[in-house]
Figure 1 (cartoon, rainbow, N blue to C red):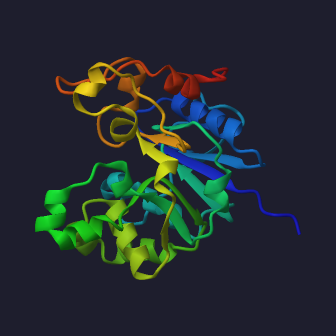
Figure 2 (cartoon, one colour; figure 1 turned 180 degrees about the horizontal axis):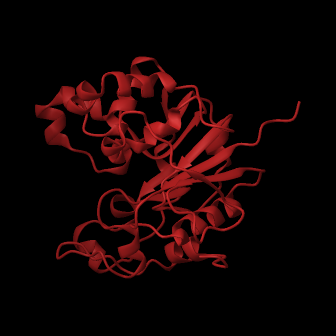
Length: 264
């Protein structure tokens, strides 16, 4: 039996990210995924996308269009989307692929993701004075990069729709809610911390060292993630520094993002 081709998916809405972000993400996947795949972009504007990208309308969570934007990724969990099957690797638009993606598809697990805490520096005061909260955050996934089986977690979306007011009152965002839901069912697994690196916390030297050293890509990194500020667009444009932190040149990052810019 021929294995099903995996899907790599992203979402784009509004005007924050142009089509070049989708095209460059697709180009990065093409360079670093040595197996057949389909690339799907759920979007409200497909203009400018590479013809190799399958553009599809943004799915709705079912909780009301006016309340969807911060929780929109949950719509990917629907089990009634047309031609939505098999293994799905989701990538945010503001990530940069720098190495092989195959392990993200081959690692066992029902729902695999970045551990959110791995993208940030330790918080010893929270661990000491709010241990329960710290334990909760230790099991929260960051949904910049995650993998799942299409249709397998529709129960999480159903809970969000049915208990909408309670969910948004109890959780700050979709990744906290989804992580808690999956953890309670022993369905959440985390990838090795080295695979997904925060640009700010993992690539930029800390403190005064940033004024003497430029950002470097740590060994083992496969995807560079932009969590919080600076935003990826600022870094690529040579901005994003603060009085306490310099963001030096990162030609390796620019090269990884812009390689093969035929359509971007």
